[in-house]
Length: 348
Image 1 (cartoon, rainbow, N blue to C red):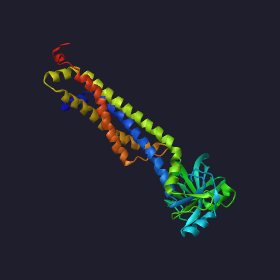
Image 2 (cartoon, rainbow, N blue to C red):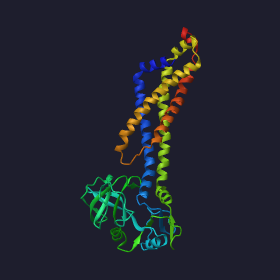
Image 3 (cartoon, rainbow, N blue to C red):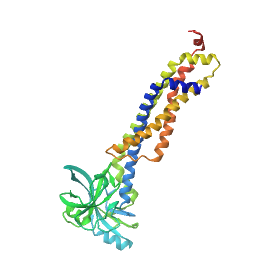
Image 4 (cartoon, rainbow, N blue to C red):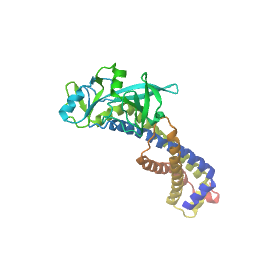
């Protein structure tokens, strides 16, 4: 029965080719959506890790540092250093826009002390050495030595980072902390957070100590709703894939009603008929799965939002494909099992 089912696929190859293409597109899109959800987590983790801190000190009542506009005295870093004996630096985390080819582009602006451990790792060029310089993420596609305007001040690009984004792919630019104070706080000795290279057990008065995990979770809070929406879309796409494969298998079963009658008249069991239809569904979904992986590799790099497809997503989609094959073969199987063997002899 399996061989007969495979020959039926060959006979109706155009129909199955269309089904493979449609199912592959659906599966490919689900992979890309999985990558989007994962990229939210990855970029938040990378952004927090880029500071190299073991503890974050924020204004009292704050649940995070990246999305808060609250400030605290930058001099608190001195108290933290005295209490822990470890390095501690003030940072200024702000938002802004920079014109690129005449188009205002939203960016995250990080002010970090020059030469400190909180400076992000540079992939191209060098780290900040003085005011008047800026390190940008590669996503902005800016060249080393290029002059750009950051919050109304013209700075020179001296280095580039990679993958330093958050808030759904918004790139980060890094400037000297003193420059960030001038641009964001009018030169006042303020910071939005203190980053310590060692764990801090006691918070200075008027502040709260946060772990890197708490800072990351707070940064991910605005992305919960988009993540839930993407998950719902994935479920809907899997239903669409099931309907595509199921309709093709059901139409195939309708076309083969007399064939099934002949098989039953010759002694074929219901189990063998079911196995044949399941083999069709599994082959269709397997081919769609492989094509879908290829399509996801084409679609993901062309999106404005990042899509970092994790390895486990491929295994998960393989399991989903098998589930789609099993469920979609039910409709065709029910039709095949109702066939009267008398049809093989021209009976009603």
